[in-house]
Length: 244
Image (cartoon, rainbow, N blue to C red):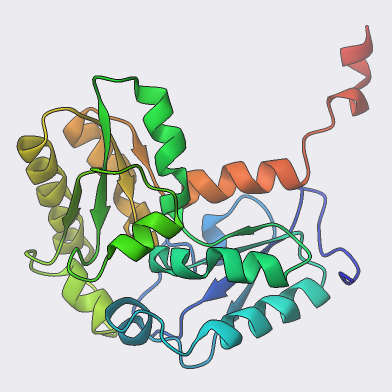
């Protein structure tokens, strides 16, 4: 059974399963508590490094994620999110073992975004590592077949600094890597009508990417904000003026 609710006056409390990292979690990063306009509880999953989760497919880490999720539920969170899109592999397993709703990956938005675009446009995915994002990850998230995927591996900063878990991050260079990848995605696939960011660490650059490309950009922030809003919907009837 869930513990006593951890929610505050501004809505449901979201539990976030965070990888064990040392790279800077700047404002906009899912692992920075100041990113969120609602209460969060962030818990590090032991041994869940970027190397193990992204490059090694999170092998052997399912129990650690489920146990950490259970700890957060016991503390009263209303839902569970994570700090890595590659954890779509664990969506069904963590959800099955949790008593609260679970949203492991921004990739879970893909099919819905595609429905928004109509038949002549496609959603395109930017990922931190196209080589590591397998068909299994995409299938687990329900990503439509033939969805374009492009990685930031060819950049100068973002993929290297995050996946190698470096203590320093050049934000300007990281932003340029995202912008370059977005431009390359649209050039290669002119029918892309929206961009979905797999990597949670890309969210700080979503606005810059949307301005540069002119298409909607969806990320972990858009996803978990939507998710959290349903865990504790706004009570319009509490405002007496709505009854007049």
